[in-house]
Length: 208
Image (cartoon, rainbow, N blue to C red; front, side):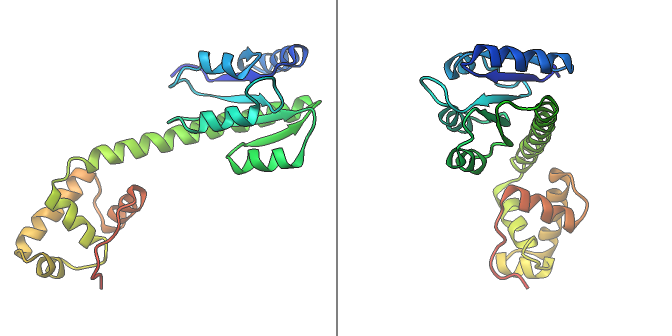
């Protein structure tokens, strides 16, 4: 896995350079951009990192850029910095998922800490997305009948009750159950239920 990149987007060149020097001195890999468009043209989709983003910029603002990035599959965490500190802007930014909203001049230790948190959040998000992808791949192995049986099992029904609802032999339900556990790589109903919750699978009606 390549080192994460801290992307600094700020039309104020002296501020941009100062932030880059500070973060580089603390061991971060840094890239700088003078506009939202420059960042969008340079981002590598799978590269870990975070964004230190100015709010007020010519053309596409920081808030506009945040909205554009949020529409992607793997948006990077954002630390906003601003010379104005407008409360409505900060509220919108945080509501849309920004990690921090800092007012210039940002103390060195505050910026370093905010970037460290953002990179940690990015690592957590990537791990969660990887787990989701792996779970979806496992779920895709199930046959339509196994998926149907799964919804009954997670509703709390016993094998006999599932068999009665689906009008098939209890022995067949046991076979389906064993295959479901094998394909989803779990060995307990608690584990199966957690997987179903993570995948957003709705239990069948009729649970006891």
